Length: 241
Image (cartoon, rainbow, N blue to C red):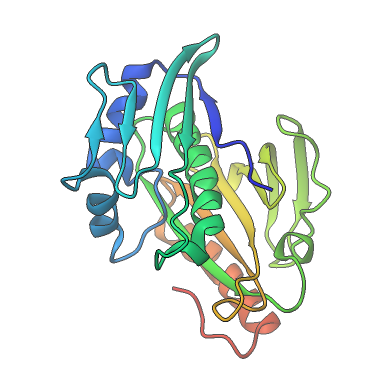
């Protein structure tokens, strides 16, 4: 079942639009730090087939998916409408991954604009193989409270986390994390991935930790906790980096 691909951001439509049209700002919410992130952003948001709506309330990105911005009580609703699925496309098998990715990135967009509009995030990305069940369950996050409620827990990685539940969906959990930012909080998203026959036969899980203004030692500690836990629990896998 496809999740509702929309969020309400506590910001005006022009602020949201700027976050869609400035490459350095897109990098604060799209994806995670990686060598290819800049090229990916340019391909999706700034290639020649991208179409800007004349009133800056819609953006058709590479591949045909459409962002729509609508002023609402409390800010701006940002909605992504997926393009019709081309079953002959090389991307057809990954269609649900793309849908789930948009959901993740919409919540990262909302977080960046509401919590760190002038911040610079540093991320840690972890990819966990499937085969041993849901990563959300394995990390003890299946029963977190409703969005907006406070939580406090210790992950099996050894990290003691506290904050508020940012969102929950069928396959994802997002948590604000006090210790992921020098001021305010950071964001942790854990997303279970579906089985894709012949490509990802066991499913999997991805983890995106978005941190802000941490010193090198604090960031290294977060990365070490995640990588050590992965090495112990998935010993046949190469470390994330």
